[in-house]
Figure 1 (tube, rainbow, N blue to C red):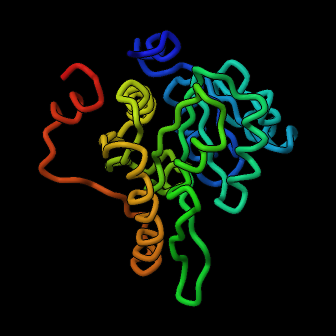
Figure 2: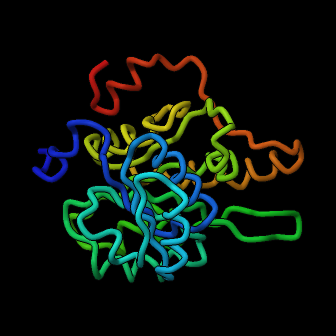
Length: 238
């Protein structure tokens, strides 16, 4: 059964989202796109002054310390490097509340002799690690690992790609999909439960290599996928 907190978020895309790590490359890209799409964006950082400086450049945006920014936000996005993932989540666990939804964008990677390589966290994936570290009642959805931060930041760039979503609750994935698809050119695709998020996270290292070789910002696009089927799988009207 859908909880009252989640049910209240199904009326449409959330109008307020907090981004932990909002001054980093991906966090800034998401903040830029959402702010210009009419979403109220709260930019979080360990340094309040840095977050406030970024927010001052965007419409409908505010900035401050992570803990302050996530207070009362229906959706929290974590956009930090994997090296800071555990530390950040332990900090968030003290302030995030049951009923809030966390979208984890983390792609576990390590620099190797031949470029970035994916690694497997102790929980199986970054998203599952987040779920284990957060309080009971906080849902986690995995998404956005394959979208270029540079392309998101540049509003002149036209987006035309899919966003792979994993999560254990259809209602939560529908909320994430609504927020993602408020960014023009992005289509959310339901890729199954949270324990498959590791597959999606590992694609990032592959894309980084492709983009370096071809000097571009390629994303993912799934072909032959009926729109109605995608909507139905995410619990949205076809």
